[in-house]
Amino acid sequence: MQGGFATLWNEKIVRRCITCISGSFKKITMTIKKRISIENRKIEYTVRKHRRAKRLKITISCDGNCMVTLPWRMSVWDAEKFIKENSKWVLDKIKAMKKIGNRSIFSRHDRDEYLKLKDYAKDFVMKKLEKYFRFYGFEHKGVAIRNQRTRWGSCSSNGKLSFNYKVLFLPERHADYIIVHEICHLREFNHSKRFWNLVAKTIPEYEKIVEQLRKL
Image (cartoon, rainbow, N blue to C red; front, side):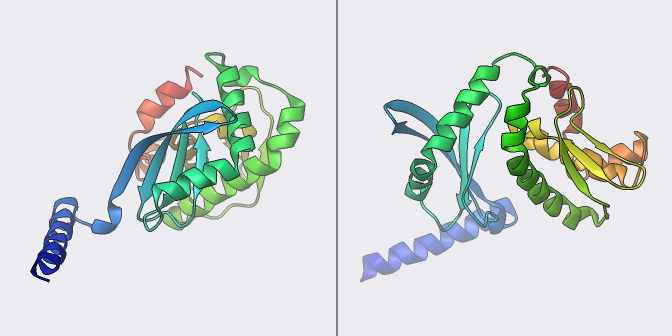
């Protein structure tokens, strides 16, 4: 009994220490590297547990890296199970990403791919818009997904937003930047200092991302 009480007491101390160090226990994330075999292929992936995550999500970045984000209450085994349940999608997406390789994403202009991924891209974009509209509080007049050759997104003077379906191929944070960039144009229809200050409120590292996007 004494040992059990001591263990419980120590866990409480650890939790309090973590809270003091982080400033907020709810902001803690945990990242773990894992490996799984799917159809005789070894796939390395990252499990990211986050206090604010509400559901399981798989993301394949443009370099073919796989990440599973899951709520804090779930285990790493839930992540592995989720990948297995979506194994065909994961393998197809990794293959597509690696096929791009070092070529410019904009060199892809496959109409069949666009039609196949358009609805998925719309869902992807709308979820991010919902997240950032909660922060900015701006209003828009509609959202369209297009297959553009040279633009990631646009905002019209009447408040309509348009995004390239290829945002699906970007790393998560880069896609966030594209979404935020167009949202901020709803308030500042220019690239003034006021505009970039708005962007920096949620994407403080935007300059680095802009530079990286120019190389794609």
